[in-house]
Length: 318
Image 1 (cartoon, rainbow, N blue to C red):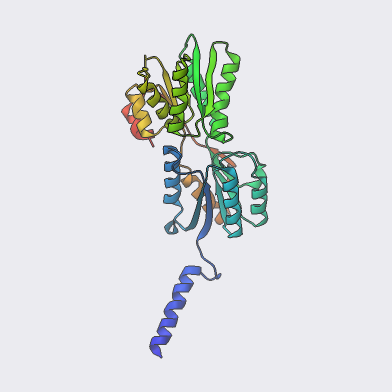
Image 2 (cartoon, rainbow, N blue to C red; image 1 turned 60 degrees about the horizontal axis):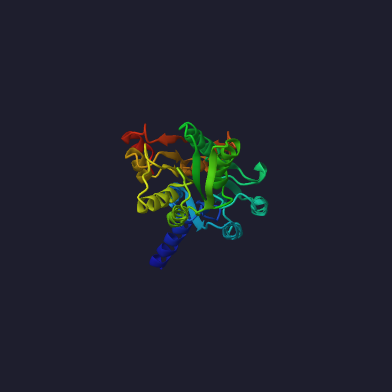
């Protein structure tokens, strides 16, 4: 009888510790909608940062869903709302189509926090947005290219997934400059969907066609790498003082090393480490506090092969 009573008490203690006095888990339930972690080195680092932060040891019960397609992300978000998460963390594949999901979350008392990418939705539908200024990233890169004072810019423009905030921001600045300058030309402007393989195929087709170009403007490092593979195959020189200027984004460590070795010319930073900001916001809201800033813009810069140092590679490479 004593053994049975002891066993019952042990079970009760275990259940109390697990769920607390209120009859439910003390862990904060977060549903995290992200892009495919294999999309790029940036995304791998972003996903790893999320998984490192949103753990049981840090007070969270986290579920993850991944897709590069808006409709699949929306379906995953709706399921998380049905499952009763406390917070929905969202890095949207595309900027449009999210109003219904955010309205459903709000009705269910679920707080939404955007990370990495903006969406086209009223600010009242989410608590905070921790994002990169993609338009500024594009403006910084195009400003750098303009500063090279080339007699003519014949650009192969490799775009990311169409409709994503990163693609819109990084494309917009280049489109504006091409429209304003008669000596800036788009040899080809085509999505390679963040893929090195697709980028290599696009650049190879331009080489095969014999169309002259002197700039690769790739909206992420992986596409720049694919472009360079096509250049190398055709024995076309690239980098500082060479035939083709190579530009990428994200600041993977291996990409910054290409700058350090002067094989590439420019890389724009996109900071993937948003999880600590989100954690602080959630803990503030959970304690009854208020958020000082609705939108937090990550601090970012651009790197030039002629000035980058090993210290920069070590400090900023992801």
